[in-house]
Length: 138
Image (cartoon, rainbow, N blue to C red; front, side, top):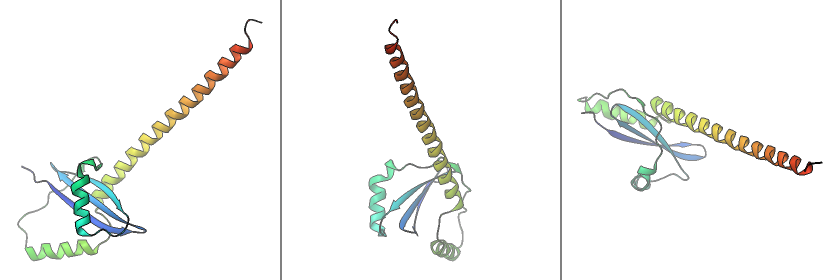
């Protein structure tokens, strides 16, 4: 059975504090980006996740490498310290978020195009109707 885990990373990206939630399930990673205004405290992040977790829109899943188990605890501690010092989000997370952004953009393009077509079709129909009203059998 594969392990499932969730990682939350909070960092400052001028002018806002950003939270990235990474969810690994069945060997696939998906990520979600949360924008906080002011610097959130730990309990605020925890409360936010408790209340809004099921409403978060995660990106499509991408393959994630398996993490090793049974490593030296001091090494794990050092790596954790390095990760907290590093600003930004992991490359897999960035890839997942970028994929989600591209999907939203393409969906937005489609909806805008449909709206434009509907407006132009409506205008065309109005012009046709006015034409018919002018030529009532003369």
